[in-house]
Length: 256
Image 1 (cartoon, rainbow, N blue to C red):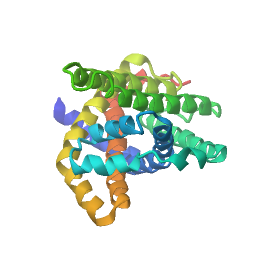
Image 2 (image 1 turned 90 degrees about the horizontal axis):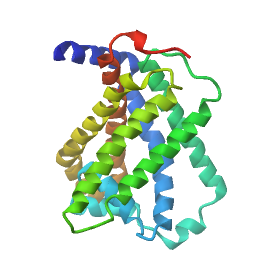
Image 3 (image 1 turned 180 degrees about the vertical axis):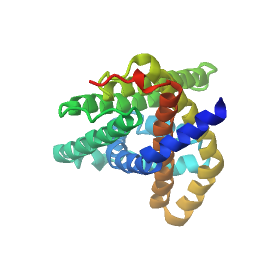
Image 4 (image 1 turned 120 degrees about the horizontal axis):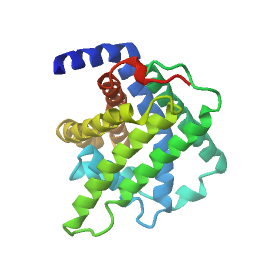
């Protein structure tokens, strides 16, 4: 049972070009959400600690690695004053492009035709939902610090919110052409894969991040973060692909 599923996921993954799409996901995430999160960090009363804490938790970092990532989100007084409406609009356009890229991959996975021109509205909502989840996960690390309740709250918000995000995001970007039930396994698989990515990051990327931060400064940190984002993109697409394979035949997809 497991071997045929793995074989089919591998075969479909090569057809869909999961790795290439994951690299595009990382690049668009870097030029879209990271700048937005930096601006939000500058406006935050916590001076960006919540956003930085979310990223370090997601990557499984500690010690010097945590400090290197926090420097990327250190709020400076000039950050907000030098941010223009034009620059934010440009970032938003890239964000919608990222969602369009995700939508294209999901449509390929589910063997659906391209969505209509007004898909941009759904892509905008999807971008807002993704950003909202990141901010919610970042906030979940703030209440009840240094109490037994805090770790449970952060884990519950991150995992449950992740399942709801990837479940709803698939439904939204596919234009309701696939029923809710077949999309759930993909959402669960994506969240489980992200948990696995966290442990991999802790073992492999965390030491590399410290080494690069010492050797190359902030640019070294960014390179490792981009590598982690490629892993995130891969898990998002591979998780959806696994859900597609587990859902059964193509009859689950309803063309719209």
